[in-house]
Image 1 (cartoon, rainbow, N blue to C red):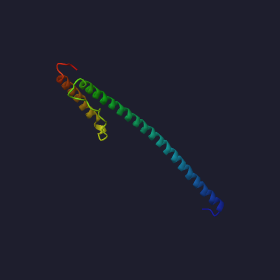
Image 2: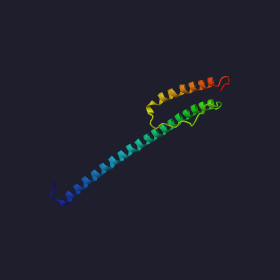
Image 3: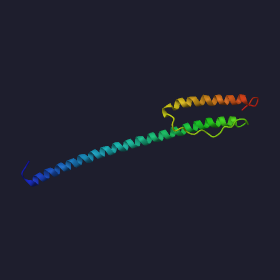
Length: 120
């Protein structure tokens, strides 16, 4: 260290400026990372919302198919359309859909047989 107070002050000031520049550079890098992360997350959210809408449409189409088959029968009514199950495991969606389609077909076939000789 030097005994000159002005030189010491300049050295401290230079150290403070370097620290401020490093901090600013760090904050800029972090901001860039966060903006990228937010953009990726937004894209994932939009994709999930589109997938949810598509699955809802498929389920409602199957429900309408069954409700249409029930329309001509006096002894059975379709009731309200199914609501989404918020407790369902999203990772099991393919298995759920694999169960719904054959069950819909089975019910439709059973309704056709029950309506015999009238065809649905």
